Amino acid sequence: MYPARITDEFPAPSYRGNQKQALADIRAAFESGKDVVLVRAPTGSGKSLLARAIAGCARTAGEAAPEQVVDAYYTTPQVSQLDDVAEDALLEDLCVIRGKNNYDCILPGETDTPVNQAPCVRERKFDCQVKHRCPYFSDRAIASNRRIAAMTLAYFMQTAGSDVFGKRDVVVIDEAHGLGEWAEMYATIDLSPETIPMWNDIDVPDIGGLDEAVTFTERVEHLAERRVKELRNKAELTGDEVAERDSLNTLRQDLGWFREDYTDTESATTWVVDQADSENAPVTIKPMNPERYLKHTVWDRGNRFALLSATILNKEAFCANVGLDPGNVALVEVGHTFPVENRPLYDVAQGKMTFEHRDDTLPDIARTIVRIMAHHPDEKGLVHCHSYAIQEQLKELLDDFGVGARVRTHDKEGRDGALAAWKRSDNPDVFLSVKMEEALDLEGDLCRWQVLCKAPYPNTRDSRVARRLEDDQWGWYYRTALRTVIQACGRVVRAPDDYGATYLADSSLLDLFERADHDMPDWFRAQVDRLSQPDLPRFAPDQALSGLSSGTKRRHDRSRSRSGDGNHPLSDVWD
Image 1 (cartoon, rainbow, N blue to C red):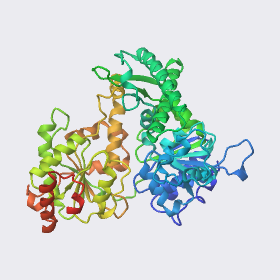
Image 2: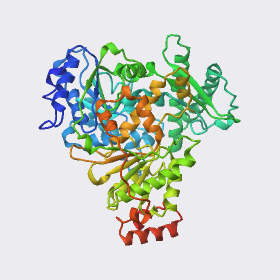
Image 3: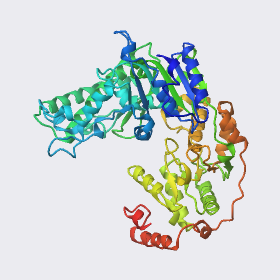
Image 4: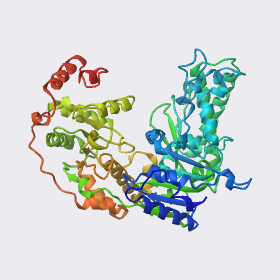
């Protein structure tokens, strides 16, 4: 790696904010001998541009000895972030490669077939005469030979050990704050009817501990291997059979890796197992702090690493979570350049939103949202509902209050389409979202205000969370929630001249700020220090709808009478 050329590799014609100083600090960190640099850069820092400059410091083929690795990887957990990179003209030399399911086969009669179900994977000994023009294999070949290959973190991890995407000189991971949690998710093993087609043929025992789980996985792997052999003996497979074969092969690899890691007395990974109290209940085997998994899939893939995020809150805790030596890691802090008065926080707390208090608190939050809507009659708003159960309750309450004409929702399958429709709309609609605290760019009039309905604490019913709390890891618990809050607060203010208000409706959020104060970045603490109570209008649903045209209200009433709810496929047309 050649950190000295980081400024020359910066892709923009000029700097904005603190980018120039950030590049200097990153260069100094690498030149000090650190192999890993954490870059804590808030919203609007231009992390993707910083990432491109760092990747450009990788050795090239003309600068390396034959035994030295060259070039760079750019990877991010967020698909939307990779889409943004692909569309950014300043990042055109990042060569994007995606998984097979994102490409369509080009053979006659197969143009609607994804490559992962094409004849080359369905038919034994199939010889594809156009493989050199296959969009997936073409993109893969190009990316493997470009200076900077860009991919999602999932694809990056899945290609560990491949001949095509081997070790490189530099690896840049954007939005890296959840790296440990993403690794835990990827390494989790789900044994259920959805992952094991012959589930009904298995007498699922009550799993009392990890030793019983190991015995059960041996039996599952044997059955999976037998089924895969049956599929391999077929001359041609259907698309569903291809998916089944690939899923079972992945499951076999995961089960083998779990048993190997569990029996390794030197492994740092702790495993937990979950099973509901019911007959033939699915079994989930989860790793905690999967250092060994990350070593194989990430840390063995490069010489030097840059991890960028706005919310790597505690260097030592982050390093412990992902298996890094803090002594070999530098932290570069990038200051916030957005005026704090443009990103205010408002206290509209109505009580606790814990499960036992939710039914009492949520109606008050709904009334408060109506008042906020009246305060922003002509501006779009976003409500972070935290869960679909809260979203559903809130939608019913807002409908009952008579403001449903201005409210949109989404479900798990249609979230992207619903989000796109809301962003396209010229109406000042309010979008009730679930799990959209990250990787959502709502610059300008796309959204001017948002509400956080609930403090996003990790679910204590999750065995990994419970285990950490049993080990007194409360710092991790509060940091995880604070990280999500900070990410959410960054959705509506995306540029120095942008502005947007964030309303805090759960009193537990105020408690969180006190408990996690020592892990709070200075620029976010400045927002918290200015926290105030807004002067909202009285509860008046008609005022909340004053920004809508009368025609829009009538069309909405008509659509509700036809569809019975707000999720009809034509609701966007009628609204």
